Structures are given as structure tokens and as C-alpha cells.
Image (cartoon, rainbow, N blue to C red):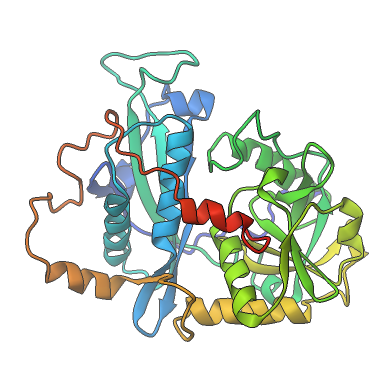
Length: 368
């Protein structure tokens, strides 16, 4: 019998409130009309962000970078709105505070909804209002607790990643993840934990929800943006960690066969974090476990996320410190629900331009 469950379905605890268009509502009140545009046409963009338990309390990992990508995705899909990056940052901090969770996964989502008084149907998305929510829940290791140490078994998918001029891989959109679901389901039904997709030219792209790294002869290689990958925040973190450790890292196209003869392979991603790959298509990779370089990168990553090691940049947003800082700030006229004055979630062009640093970093020292 084929397994259809995988190891990524357990949800120990859910935050009982959700941020919705500037207000906090009950989880049970977060509802969408069945005729909403998003349900019929996949018109949503979203993010995944981890908040880690540290000695100084909950700390959100690279919050601003994630929210910048969230804005970038909305801009690519012409989702014009009045929200600013600080609105989403402050809402996330307050959501974690209200959740009472020491660690959690944060999910912002922006989608095209339905104006029930003046409903509009059809592919054209513009007549439909936008709705924005941020939820949070306690989520363990995405590919299983033992995967972090022992690695996972994966297979190369028969499904290719989307071509760059058909669906924008740079946008983290709900529609793109139908492709990811095909990759994931095929992998699970074939007895693997995850799948690796190739791009339309046959080169390695990424997993269903993770970027991939190939270690050969002491050099860490990763596919370029041109291989239809999402510009991962955790991927960028790996690149910077490698720089600190003096590990050579290169962005280059990677043939499928290179996976089989690699010394080490590992995934990176907000959900997967740093997960070693021990086999591909039932071919053992290296020693069949976590490699030496993977272990070094993984160790530094978890030291940073636990607050035990200084990161290369301001990667951790400590919820308690931010709340205390906000309490000491003078009033600015912004409503205490965190919404910018006049923000309605539909009109206006208040979308921050694509952050040049994040994009440019993809081309520096073969980086993400």
C-alpha cells in the first residue's frame, strides 16, 4: 500500500487568533466565501516564516526579508494595496506575542476575495477585493525530526518546474504550489520523503518546497535563479554562512547525474531548515548520511536561530524586546491595531519596490 501521509502533517498547537486586514480576529472567524476568486483561480501570494525559541524569548527569523519577498510577490501579480512592510512586521510580532507560543510558523497570505454586494466572476482578477491574513501555529521539523541528523530519501520528479515566462518562480504564489503538490504527491507515492524537480531544460531546479545544494570536492553548488527557483531566504542564509566559514560556494547549472555522484546534498527552506539528503532515486549519496560540510552549515544555522551565535546581519527579531520598544515609543497616530491610516487592502500603489540587495545577492559570489 502506498503511503499518502508523509511526515509533515502534525500540528501540535495553533494560535487562536489571526491578523486580518489590520485587526485580530478569532481563528474560527477567519472564513472565505466559497465563490472567492482565489478558490477558483489560485490568486494568492504567501510567505512562510519561522519563530524560534531562544533564551531571550521567541525570535522571528529574518522577518523583514520574508515580508519584503511577500510584497515583491504581490507586486509581480499586480496586487496593489496600501500595506507597508512595517505593518506586516508589527502584525507578526504582535501575533506571536498573543499566541503565547515559544516557537511557531507564521503564514501571511494575500489573496483576491469576493465583494459579496457586487460579485465579479471570471479570470479577470481586478474587480475582486484583496484580503490579507496572518496566522501562526507550532510546527515541528517539516521532513521529520530524524531527518535533520540522518537525512532523507528523495526521488527526481517526472514533473518539471515551471518555465520562467509561464509562471514567475520569483513570486511565492499559491498557484505555483499546484506544481509543488504534484512533485510532493509523486514522491510520497513512490516511497520518498521529497522530490527534486528539474527545470524545462533538464537541469536541477529545487524540491517541492526547498532549495537544494550540491557539495562536491569541498565546493558547495546551488542552481541559479534562471533554473526556475524561488529566491529562498534560508538559501541566502546558507550562502552567507558559507562565506563566514570560508566555504567556497558557486551558483551554477547542475545536471541530474551530478546529484548521484555528489559528496553531499542538502535542502534548505523555512520549513525544512537545513535537511541532509542521503539518497536520490535509491542511489546512496556519499556515506549515506549527513556530510561533514552539511553538518558545519547546519550547526551554525541552528546556533544562530537559537540565539547562541551572532548572525551576519539582523536576522532575529526578538518579540519581547520589540514589544517593550514599541511600548516606549511616543504615539504616532497609527491605529493601535497596527494598520496604516487609510489602508483598505485594495487600492493604492504602496508596494515597496523589489529589494535590490536580495536580488543582487543572487549574483554575488555565485550566491542566491
